[in-house]
Amino acid sequence: MEERGMREDKGTAGAEDHSYTQPNLVSLLETSMDYFEQGQRYEVMSEVAKLLQPFYEDARDSKSMMEMYGKLHQAYRKVVDIEESGRRYLGTYFRVAFFGRPFGDDHEKQYIYKEPAVTTLAEIVLRLQKLYSRKFGPGTPVNIVQESGRVDIESLASNHANIQITHVEPYFTEDMLQDRTSRFERTNNLSRFVFEAPFTRGGKQQGDVTRQCMRKTVLTTSHWFPYIKKRILVIHQEQFELSPIEVAIEAMQRKTSDLVAQVQRSPPDLKRLQLLLQGCVSTQVNQGVQEYAVFLSQQHSSELSSAQISQLKTVYRSMMDACQHSLDLNESLISTDQLLYHQDMKSKFQKMLTTLNPLIADDSDNDDRVAHGSDTYPRAARRSQVGLDPHRMSAILFSSISGAT
Image 1 (cartoon, rainbow, N blue to C red):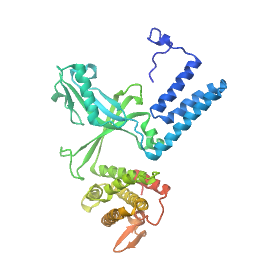
Image 2: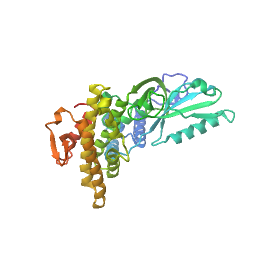
Image 3: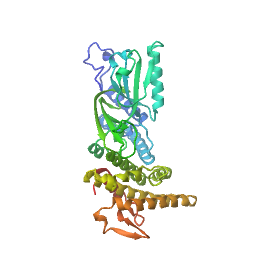
Image 4: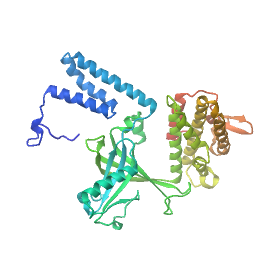
């Protein structure tokens, strides 16, 4: 936090008004606990409690100690409920870039905005459009730049207030994800954000899977969210591009991760589980899963490295394993009126296995196959005989992300 209003800041408005005493400090810490509770930052309350406890102990203040631990008890009860439901929304983030003389020093600068809970792109566009229209008046048009990629400044009217708004997500490296294991840790102390823009080498934005590339832009802010201000200046930007097979691998990893998370969730969310399953096994809903197998065909595999081919095969096997676990869980949760729906998904999954097995098998699978009618199935994709082992599911997710075989 920026140091303002400190006692040594002579002449600063408000600096002389503060009473820097121990009771005042205790009062501020107690107030901060209440604010953290209101902001649903329950996990931070224990850190404040560690600061308060020595003061209560020195004062032999058992009542305050009891009240503090009562608040912590309620806070962690809420944490448990949130972890089970998966429903806590600590903000939505957007990149906002400004272009035009009306913005003065903010011309060509970009900020990350933190908006409340689940804020849509349309909502922040409307809010900023109204805000700057009031600020600049009717003589200065406020335009929203529709493109999310690079802006051709020369094509914009310099006397207009031009605003580009893009939804961004917190960005983590694999090492950071290993340290930030909880949902709270991945929504707190954020300074790097990412947004994606699809493109093809031919200039079009969209193409078939063999031509679809992805450009990722990673932005770094000057401070960390949450912050005392709702927007923070972007001080660094870097870009990297994913090749078509890298786009496919990342998409498959994301689907596998979502499935594993649903299987491990307690209590299960049947509706969400079925939506994810349908998106993986139903070609009418999502053909991408099977379309990505084109990279394993002889025509395209010769153009790719053996490491990329091996990683894609590993991701496919991890997804098939996750699908089987998800089907097993779905079967244990549904009522009789959904049996036909389940059988339909199961049938589509078996057809997908039949199509993919010859492409995703490796030499280690040769001794690891079992007959099933006219088809054969790798053991990695056949889990109906075993329980939903959480250690096994974690291994599936790790294998998918790391590309380990």
